[in-house]
Each structure stands twice: as structure tokens, then as C-alpha cells.
Image (cartoon, rainbow, N blue to C red):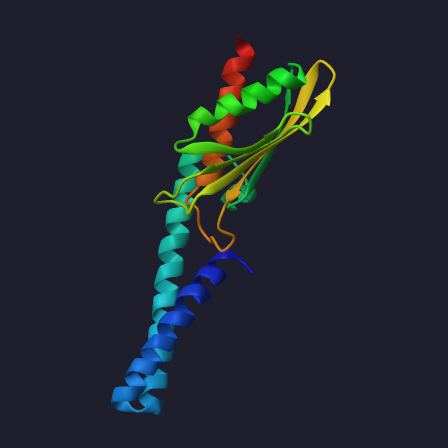
Length: 177
């Protein structure tokens, strides 16, 4: 199901149900049902348009040249770093300074896994950033995953894409030196 439909249903059903119940007490079940359906449809439509447009606009500000996958809320990027595994692991941890209020929650150097979480902000209820590293001799393959911590998140206003972009930008800056 696409994002607009999910937003529509997530806003229309509860709002319409509450309106139907409240109007049923005052005007009877028939009028309550009619007002509930009308208010649910209206609120669902308005919220899905507003949130959908704001999400698209925010994502375009982060990376205007990306394809339709950029508009999702979970992002994955695979990068090959031309440095040994241990240095790549340290670089991944240090890259998290670019993400506001981000803290490492788990790290396992031997398995090449780092899990970090961000705090709640106006865009999301927090994000989980995961690094999965594989030793490739004199280089390291890094998989970066950024997704909302709350699985019911429908819109992140480009926050997880922004996390990925900030981390890869940090990698590019450090690999030049």
C-alpha cells in the first residue's frame, strides 16, 4: 500500500470514528454515521495531501537528483572504503558526530557491526543507524542502514536519507586526506 493511502487511513479511520460516536450521542446513529464518514474522508484527504507534499519537498531539499526510492523512509547505502577493517570501523563510529543527538548503543568490532540511535526530533520519533562491515583485505565493504526506530512511522521528512548523506559525506572528506 502506498504512503498516501496509509496516511489517509491512519487519519481518516480514527477521526471519523470519534466524530461518528460523538455525533451519534447528540443527533442519533444515522446522522452520527454520516458526519463520521464525511469528517473522516475530509481529514484523511487533507492530512495525506499535506504530509505527502511536505515529505516530498523535504526529500528534494536533501537530494534533488535521487529516484523514487529516495522518498521511502528506510535507506541503505553500500560503500567500499579503501582502508583496513579496523580503521573503517573507527571511521564509522566517528561519522556519527554528524548526526545530531546520536549515540552508539552496540558495537562489535569482531562482527563488524555498529548500532546507533538518535533521539526524538520534530521529524521522527528517533532513528536507528546500523553499520555492517566486511573485511576485504586492504579495504572494507560498509553497509549503512538508516530507518525510523518506530516501525509505524509513515513520514520522516527525509531524515533517514539525510543521515545517510551526512555519513557518506563524512567518509568522502576523510578518504581524501
